[in-house]
Length: 191
Image (cartoon, rainbow, N blue to C red; front, side, top):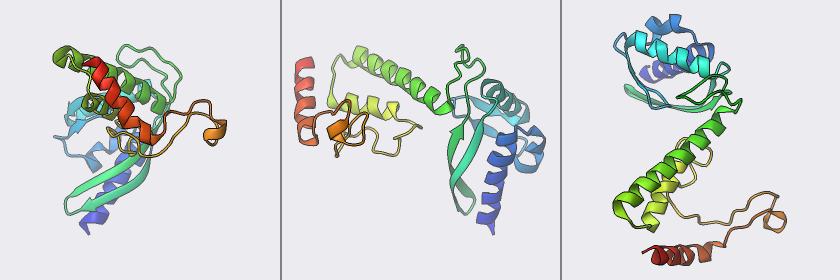
């Protein structure tokens, strides 16, 4: 069955090739003309370029590993939902090693991307709007914890920082019914 073959191929790609940085299995699982877009935004074509990308990740995150949460396969298409793990131990895009786990690096990177996106839009549109705030929030949560919790949307339930409930939390933001009026007031002030 094609679906089973796809699942096995994806499992080998992540669990054998990536988790072991084993480039010797390229011919077994990839075509020579592979076109790959990495999580760090790099595009690679063919075994040589893709192999360089694997080496780049290994140098930056020598303990890098993947855990497959789910594989969906239908006909000749397949999708894998993953959890990446690893520690920033080598230079990446001019950033010296921090010893920080992969997830935290992605979150920090998203903060920078979200701020740059917001500033670029503000320079262009010269208007802070609820839509822009939602767009920035979407960039902020791309491929990180909470990314499946309605990014780009205002929250619909109470949250807090620290503690186990609102009563012992370090910080409790405004309740849900106050969010849209407060955001609307912010939008009017900035107009």
